[in-house]
Length: 190
Length: 271
Image (cartoon, rainbow over all chains, first blue to last red; front, top):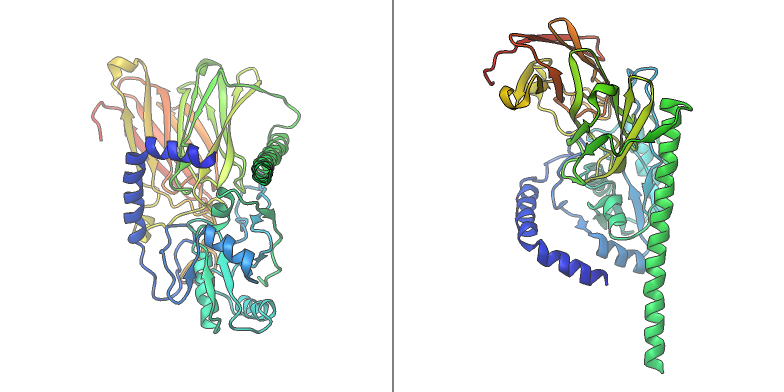
């Protein structure tokens, strides 16, 4: 049924969709992989690739989750309360939602990482993979989010050989009809 | 038999999936309602929020292409009764995006802002009337991604122009009568404090517009209170009771206690 609706939708909007798709394609093609880590704003257009890693989209991630033991790492940032916010301002971040079974390690996707955060990240990877450099690991955060790209690149530099990057993020997972779950961050050193 | 059984199971399976989806959506909707109740309590206390769907038109794209720059428009049908307007983005970490109070030279009929939106969220427009009643309307907005009031890249060169302003008068005076609409653009990064500085490696300190005051010949048009939910380079569309040869004075203050001032003479030339 869903497919039928989708088909009707598609035929109605083929032209419009095609034009949008072309524009989207052009926009995406314009983002090259940076040489090093991405140090700009974490929210923004991301490349379509990560050299040395396999890019997964939702169907592939679902298939892999069903067939393989994966270490799923959510690299989304923790909302950082500005110190100079008005004392009377309402500050209420919504509970973070991610893919069930994930480990949420905020801060590992920053362009520059503090030494203690990096040490924490390395240790956690070693534990989560039981020291197996061939353990498949998937990094994700949000749509248009560089944090998982940086974190995945970083994990490669530690010698992990089966790194996957899921750029669709928690939103892509949910939009495909899958559930998300409320998550707690690991207590990464500040 | 086998075949019909299989069809039965298949249909049951499909129904189960659909039901699960519907249940999920219901749960989600309940959580969103609870969030709003919680916010409304915190912002407006015990005061009831009346149905404002007949009074307020809140417009925003159903699906925004850039979560860091989402255009929003609030139009009210009863401008003469309105004291102030709120724009609340439920799922942003600092949900009150803007609170605009109007003075005698202002006209609350139209307010346009560009905001940051955290993923999928309800947005509420609330009008406070002169006699103290509150009316609300809302809509659901899907922004692609978005990480906690996402801020996109901000050009370093643009920082040098911080506080520069432009004013555009909209519409023709002979067709719009004494009330004119205008758009004020203020150069300001409106850093939300969630970005890292590549040089210092620390968080770029939040720096955002806290207030904007617009006066016409010394009379208040509007006063805006805001913080990190306004997009970089804030654009404020507003209406006011124009006067020939009037002067609009704008004073904006940011969180670094810096004040930016500019006066605009209202000649009919367009910039």
